[in-house]
Amino acid sequence: MMTLDFLTAAAECEDARLVKAVLPGPFSFAKSCELDTKSPYSSRCDVDLLFDIASIIRFEIEALKESKARLIQIVEPVDSIKDIDIFLDLLSFLFKRVKTPICHVEGDVSGVSAAT
Image 1 (tube, one colour):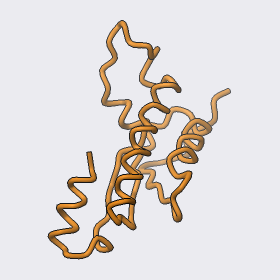
Image 2 (cartoon, rainbow, N blue to C red):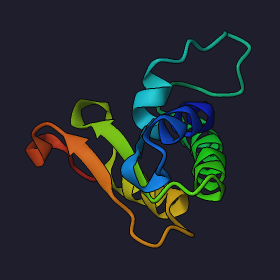
Image 3 (cartoon, rainbow, N blue to C red):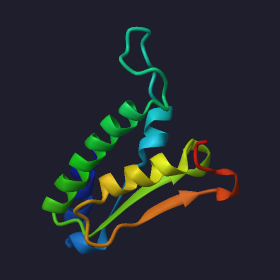
């Protein structure tokens, strides 16, 4: 995914510290998925799907770290977030071994709430 783009940009800049890698968040990634009727996931908001996607993103984060990426940003438009508690669990999972985690949430967060 992003590792090749990062390596290309780092080579162009001649310094990986000057390049920020930007990855989509699990909710926005899931929003772009098309689920087959035989899919094991019930919807794009299925927690299992979100954590499976987060596993892929986490793998990418690890690959970026191994490639000397120092700035890795997760972008998640607020209108993609359906449950703040799940979102926070996903971030915790994604950034488990990241020294300084940063997530950019775009939009008005006042309408986002925990599931009841």
